[in-house]
Image (tube, rainbow, N blue to C red; front, top):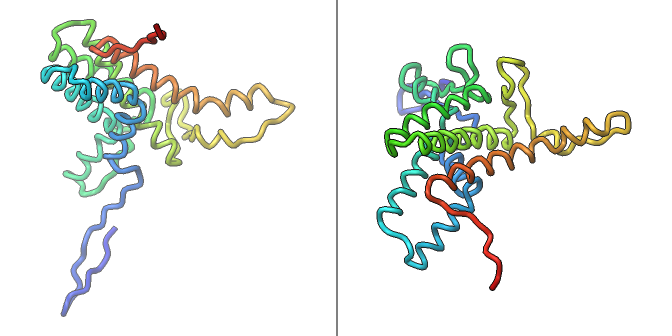
Length: 214
């Protein structure tokens, strides 16, 4: 959008870039402090107890950096379009919507490549890919919470869906089972993303277990 800017004797056009999405830092913080809250808590406890080495701290920061990058992954085209076209269009790469499950799935491959470069182990490379996938899914999750409609099922369907809009949907006697499933889908999606991230982290150095009182 171009708006005039008044000066003493003339108008100078200024390009205003509008962001119809949560700020990038919000996506990173949502993934790190919400989706990976347990990992953050265990790290803070280890730091307070001084039960962690500088090398382990560096490894954790590296994992968080990977997670932060992939938490912004569906908006990757915004960088290209800002440089080339001067706008923040970020929803498509060619004909493929970047805010879709199929595009987020590509984070597994890219994350696995990064993981293999770092660890030189196929197993850890796979778990790094799953961690990247969970971060990319968290981006869709936050956009959905913000009210954005997502092309979740592309290319099976081009319909844009906002899962969290269904939470407040009423139940009907004629289709009670369907209503219940639809209303709980966003919660299931949230839980799946969290469990996927914690599952990957549990194979990348974090240990989550229940310790009964002795």
